[in-house]
Image 1: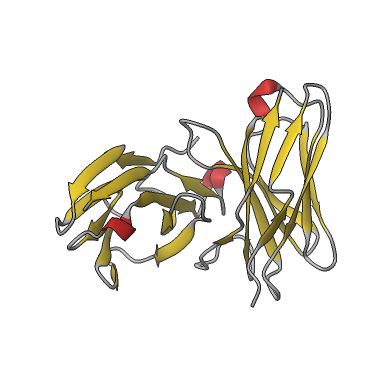
Image 2 (image 1 turned 30 degrees about the vertical axis):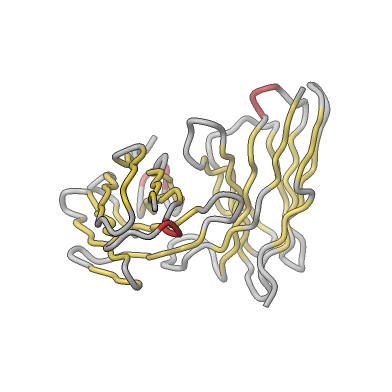
Length: 115
Length: 115
């Protein structure tokens, strides 16, 4: 069974540009959540999608958005990039969302560098 | 904003030593406590999901305990091996408030086991 796949693995962008990251969950998993990891910070929750609907959102500005498709694949978009958006972006999948005891299965992440 | 704290921030031990570290979380609105291991250049991998006060979980040489009333969990590694070197993350899932259903991660404990 294939794991969580994130593409691309690395990205270099300049300030003001926008970027789209992709996440394919484990087959059969319908929930995808996104996290940002910056040096010195823990994993910060961005948002969670289930059945193409955003179920939960973290404390990030509106420049960060996402969506989920009918095949459960998810994309995350960051518009008007800032230097502080340089981070490792991880996605994680699980069978369902919300109040569940399920563990998360993480992808390898996309390392975004904003110059 | 929820506060999930892990201590120590980093730990160096010799092969064969036993070690433990702590995760502190809010004692209200508890739903679940997750532990993940994150090895360098790999994806975070779930160790345990704990839900009941007094819960104890074990996986090989690694075990964890949970005290939801006082808001802490301990992770123990018996007879540390170099392959145990990783960042250990805990994450709190809230059953209420503005963080309902969200996983809030601590900053992690970086464990280095020297041969």
